[in-house]
Image (cartoon, rainbow, N blue to C red; front, side, top):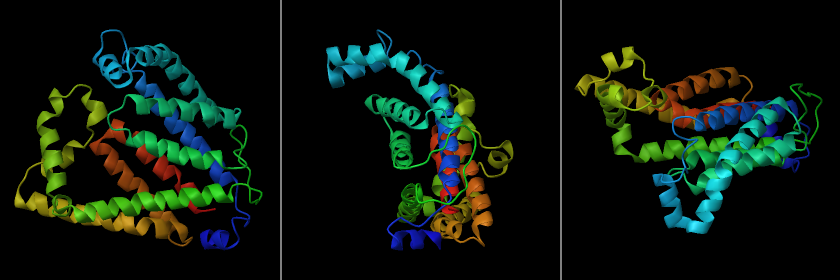
Length: 285
């Protein structure tokens, strides 16, 4: 496999630089969507005078630093969104990437659960070490070692994400039993109409919560089977993605799995699902 050949060669093995360039387009597109969504649903007024978020910032950073954060907040939202779009379009990609990562880092100052930000910074760092991010929407396929190190990093990060996720799920009795998924779908089926912006928080098809939205023994058994399938898929996907013969099936399975994940938390998982499936390009280097 190319990945082990690259490790053995000290990352001097030529690979297809277009693979990283395609991930750059995906990365920029996903972050454009994420940053654009952050402008709505109260995001524009997050640090407005008198808001709870500003009060919490003052408690955490003090009045002076909080005023500085509030002052740069709205301009930063606009700049980072424009930079993400520029990155996707390949316009001065390295400069645009730095602006995007700076804009994402800002979210660490006020988000309560910044896992998506950390993942963004991690995968963005892989782009930073790439030697050829391309320009515009054209893709270069002449083999070179310019992006070999970056592609290997993306493979390692995705593998770690999947295997660590499978390990955590395996350790959870509630997940393995199917009870976690059954309770999630059942609860959201009951309260989804009362949730603010429910379309961005819940997108499980009506067919699913109609036939699997109860807590009967039958439903829990089916969710137990689904939970076992997810764990097996997360364990197998990184290996299957590296094998040319199984890669097309692994890509299809991975996209289907992330689409199902996103039904549970559409807005929250847009970054994780989008960037993870985008890293699939790296596996075919």
